[in-house]
Length: 212
Image (cartoon, rainbow, N blue to C red):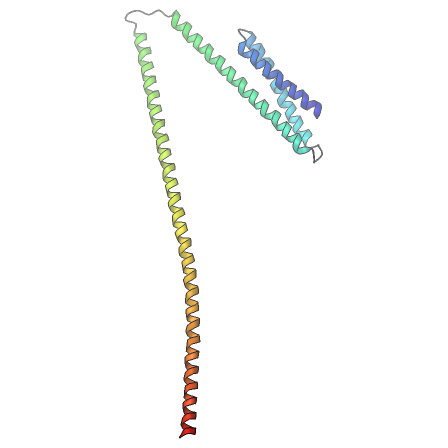
């Protein structure tokens, strides 16, 4: 696994160097360098797939570190693929701009050329549509911002209501406890009253019996 890992890491460095060559390449060299880079990237992807299989065969104590290294290789490979696509897109845009420039320079216009006015009108319409699209996106973003603010305010309101409900529940719990204590004290006072009345009646009976 170590040999394959170092081989793949070396390929990644070679592709990084080739991307610099691709950015400076001209003419037919561009396609040659692109083919070389794509072949190396395909080789890297194949090696990463093999490394993923080999990671599972590593001892348990070494497996997490091995998996981390393979994941880093996969991340580097994805970064190289993205850089490759970016360079290809930039090259394609340059070629399109060059073609349009050559077509514009080679085209001859007359004073009453209707094609010129048509091209200007089309450009104006395109610019108007772009401005309208930009305005619609601004409105959409503004609406989304307002919705997010409303959700935040509702969240704060709900938190306040939840807190009040908790306070009310605590208050009701305290009130129930106090009511139970009052009822218990009432029953105790009733027994004391009846006991006192009975004792008083007995004392009065004894006083009347023995003192009269």
